[in-house]
Length: 165
Image 1 (tube, one colour):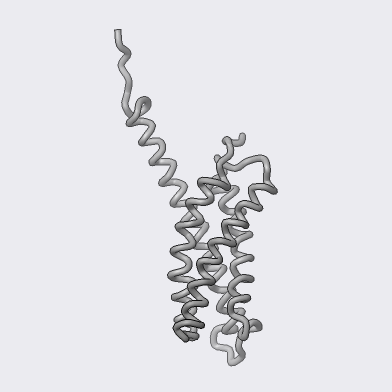
Image 2: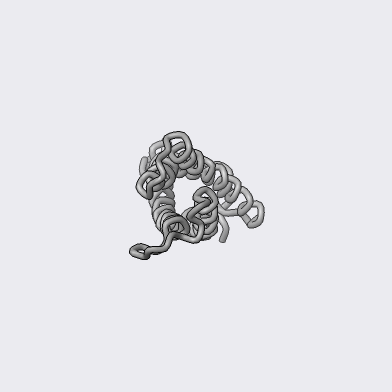
């Protein structure tokens, strides 16, 4: 005698649906945290290099735009780790907080490297140094490539623990 199963709760279809629902929630939350981190990163970078909007003075790191990008991204990274740890991947975080944070930082450094390479290529190979060019190269192209890499890395290596109560 066979048992009747609801495909929405058990079996392959149910597992696929639950996996898809989880992935969709993670992507939406990751995107929200990423958008907020992007706003923080971009705002800080523009302040550091170009100063306050409408002000005549340049930013405090005007002559060192790559360092400005690194500093802005470092601040946004801490914000992003907190948001992803306690919201996006809260069901995946581990009790090894220091290890998790170090992995998170490592993968953000690699993601930052993608943005810095894009910015450096635009500035020093193409000779484009306007605010628009910087933002397109570092905060457009570099951000998209880095974000794809980070989501994969966080989900695969950083937030891979068992659910915490």
